[in-house]
Length: 385
Ligand code: GMT
Image (cartoon, rainbow, N blue to C red; front, side, top):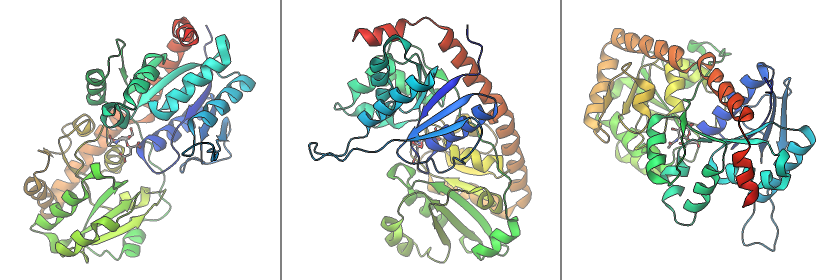
């Protein structure tokens, strides 16, 4: 049995978004632990610092062939993965999302034949919650999951939902996300000065602003707060804010809200904040929530998806959509800095204890060892198709 270190190909999305951030952090930690890691994506992942020992990045060109009705990424990705796997003798593909990454890995594996790397697929949410409900995608996702050598989900909640959604007849292992705080370059005071904050209570929200994040409820929670005059809301936006401008005016929140677009390094802003506010209608995990907790900040959020598994009992959670209850929870923090501090410390302790790299990385390494040592039954099945 090969004991490691291993040669691992990681396929992920490169943009600001939890799955790409997690995959990048995972690859960097694996490289630090002596594994050789090869990233595949259509752009360099935003948090991937290169050059780094044992880390390689392979850019995949999206094909804009006039023969096709739309650009194609999956086939060029599969070809690049197969080429690199062959030339570098990769042991394993670890792909983040079934569509398109696990499907490209399956195809690469068929191109390579018996020497193909094993496939580990990590589910982050939309394969199950969105695409899994779409008849145009469902069978392809099921195929990729059945033909992976291992499938992981980032929370129990996502695992259960996936098993209910697809006919898999296979196990899914839960390996939660992790986070490693950076050393912020600027002090908390410098960042607050930049934001024009004196002693106001700074509430932080970080997300892609996709519809599932329910930015309407985010703004309504702030508007419902008894302390709205003492609060500033900082939105670290990974997507356009334009569609919420009208609501900002309707709720008269323009002086309260600061929007920062596409900032890759968020650590110093998290440290400058006093609490996090997350109003998603669903999160498979909530990596931004975990980042907020790592910096010792209390979190106000709704009890949905995998969020309770992340927050545990470190901060109270509220029924989805209950803006009045969430605003009251926020008010309690604004009115008692002691309470905010106590819940913040509890959040940090839980984050460090449950979701540090030292706790999660060995779980991935153990899975890789098991999958690489296992029989090639699934590879044979893939080849037989
Ligand atoms: O939710 C997003 O906008 C981004 C998305 C992604 O693909 O990066 O996040 C998903 O994966 C993260 C990493 O595992 C999870 O922390 C997020 O909860 C999950 N988003 C949803 O489930 C809505």
